[in-house]
Image (tube, rainbow, N blue to C red; front, top):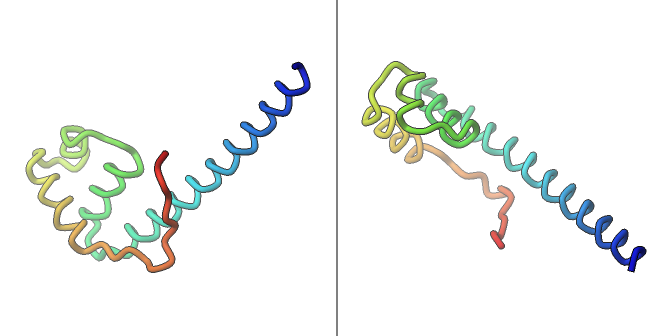
Length: 93
């Protein structure tokens, strides 16, 4: 039983490392897509929302605008985003 437990732990550690690598690659892809936007305000909204996980209130506060403006900028940014054809596709469990 002890050896099986160690093997299970090792398998879980490997799975976690694989998932972490996937997440880091996704983060890099998201950063690259955001950087291609031509408007810094739109870049900041997407960065705050998707890389820093800030609330709409906090995003508005950081950008010195109200929440509705932050949401409007977000919608405008999303409309301009071009997802690369070779983007990593993940399946959620």
